[in-house]
Image (tube, rainbow, N blue to C red; front, side, top):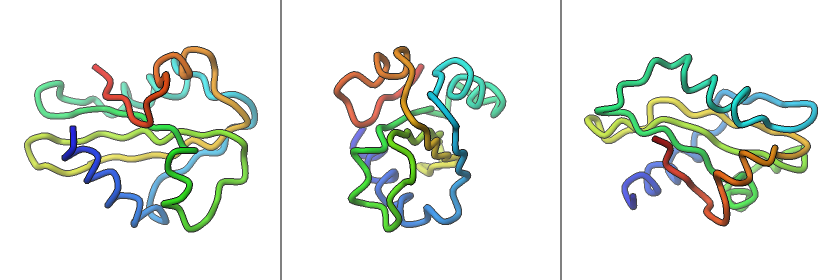
Length: 111
């Protein structure tokens, strides 16, 4: 898990190249998060999807988000030890499912 956190921290240095989506309203875990990961056609043997709370990472960002809430989601490849995909969702709020999945953790590995 520390390796994933290290890579996520280094990924924030390249945020200008990160796919970003601004959502007018609330992030839906199923509609926004799960559907994006499904579109990536990940290999469970080597890819580790994750999401993280935006407010935990604001200090690492040069430009603060315009919206009140947001998350990062990405895919860590265990074979290459690199983050292959990362996306930032900026929204007014998170839905209850997303809040439950994140709980009090800044980063959650999904399975």
